Amino acid sequence: MLGFLTRPLHRLLSFLCPGLRIPRLSVLCAQPRPRAMAISSSSCKLPLVAVCQVTSTPDKQQNFKTCAELVREAARLGACLAFLPEAFDFIARDPAETLHLSEPLGGKLLEEYTQLARECGLWLSLGGFHERGQDWEQTQKIYNCHVLLNSKGAVVATYRKTHLCDVEIPGQGPMCESNSTMPGPSLESPVSTPAGKIGLAVCYDIRFPELSLALAQAGAEILTYPSAFGSVTGPAHWEVLLRARAIETQCYVVAAAQCGRHHEKRASYGHSMVVDPWGTVVARCPEGPGLCLARIDLNYLRQLRQHLPVFQHRRPDLYGNLGHPLS
Image 1: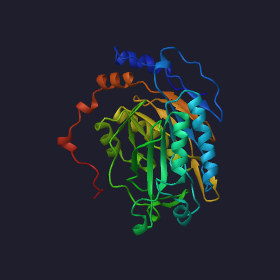
Image 2: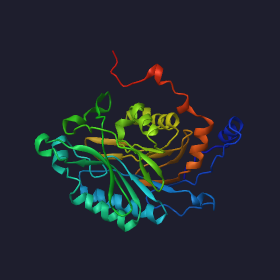
Image 3: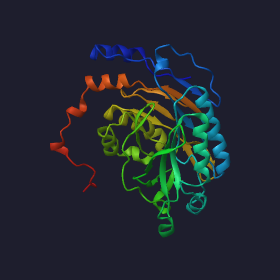
Image 4: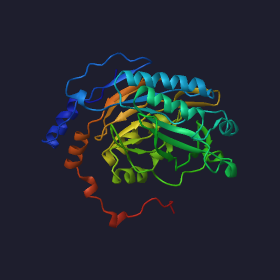
């Protein structure tokens, strides 16, 4: 069990912002079946979210079984929303297998997840579905699609990953997502959920602060980065980037991650976590498949934004439209 709100941090915040209330978040990390939590009467009023960590393989039905078990456990523990990582449906051995295993949003696998959401009565963030879009016949490529389901199993939002991971990291091996995937055409407006307004992103999107700032300016209170970070970039950048995105946007950041070895060609870093708007890691998954829980306190978020009004201090007249390639 890991909790990361320290007494020195509370004293520092109380000194800097005398009127700011710092919540004691109830946090649970579990593997694979969590124990019951001890929750104070005040914290019980805050919405509870679950972050699921899995090791997807090319076996789609086994992946669903694993994810469904975690989602049912999240529902049993009282979560209103469960987050699954990028490629929750499968991680294939090569681009050809990826295309072969992909499905449209109206296919069998998404129907199983809509039934699961209805059965459990909670919202699901399906962090990266290999989607055969309407242009499949023409392009023979798919989309990396983040799907948000409500507690009745209805699709309320879809975001298609806009930044594709075409990189070559020494020690981690090359990745060229564009071999099989099309970039999404647009961002998705933040969506109101029982936990707050959620801005949707996927994995490599985390490296582009312009996206997170755009979502925050559009009203996001929670940013989510379902991911499958590698073994080299994970230890170096994962937590740093998540905390940076939380601090600069003053949003909660929820990051469900793939972990462990998927097959002989690929492994993922794991370390799923929740970061609060101050940049504190308030929940973290242990090694291996499992889940962690955190409560979302939007009053704390609003107080922090009031005491540190960085969005009011921005100077678009000086740095305006960012995002152009380096010269």
